[in-house]
Length: 105
Image 1: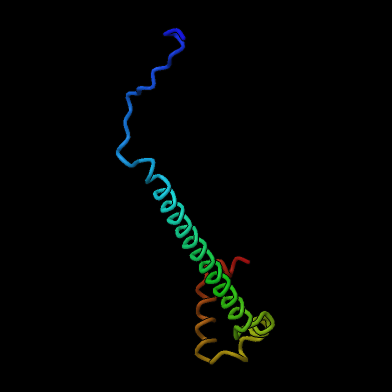
Image 2 (image 1 turned 180 degrees about the horizontal axis):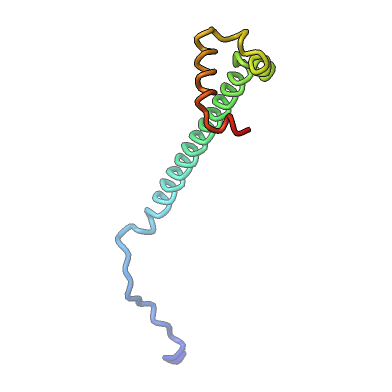
């Protein structure tokens, strides 16, 4: 063999003692750390989804059970004197009389 075919195996880089022996252990630790992190993220995401579903369900249930349904609002709008006290009616009349846009219609 000539000198051209001989590859010099010396490199300018060095690694600490036991680097390759400990590589498998370090890799195993990193994999288990990432798995734990993924589990925590998945659990937190699932908890957030459950919280959102519960909140939406609660708000929908509460909205459906409101005292004033659309029909009740319509009845109040058609005949407010049945549902209001005399003082409340007088306040409405005073408000309507002082409304500058009410007379223009």
